[in-house]
Image 1 (spheres, one colour):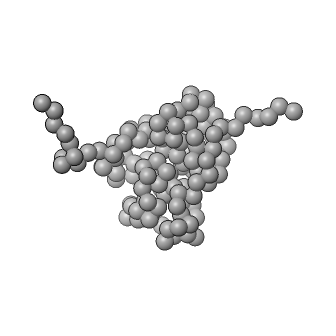
Image 2: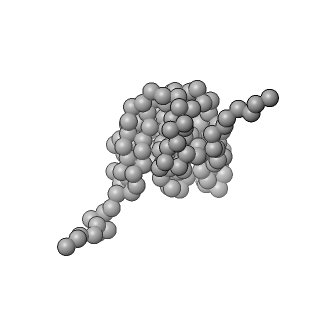
Image 3: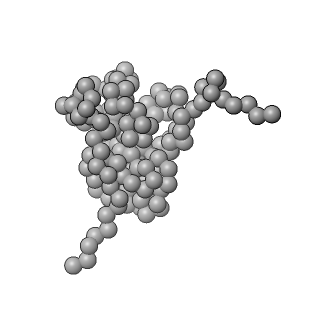
Length: 144
């Protein structure tokens, strides 16, 4: 019997079990921020809570949060309509926050980082390409 193709997958809890919220559920958006932006779990959790996320109830309007509430990160948010399988076939290089109808996760250099592997036929509704952290004026280097 032929083995089915499975994309590269790395199980990641995003540091939830070592954080101050080890029993949190429905926290895929928190974990996506942790994995994509290298942000501590508690910081990601508190930022989403300040945005209106209630404990153990998931995050609503996550795309809007990415577009407006992370000014220190350079993110390009794009509406999208493709399956996860097709996206992975394009061998994505870089870091992406992927949004589906009912789930959010991170892909980093072609590796899905999440607590479980979402169905490959699920449609991606948007993705955010992480271009990096923006420099503050004191960090900018002027060239002569």
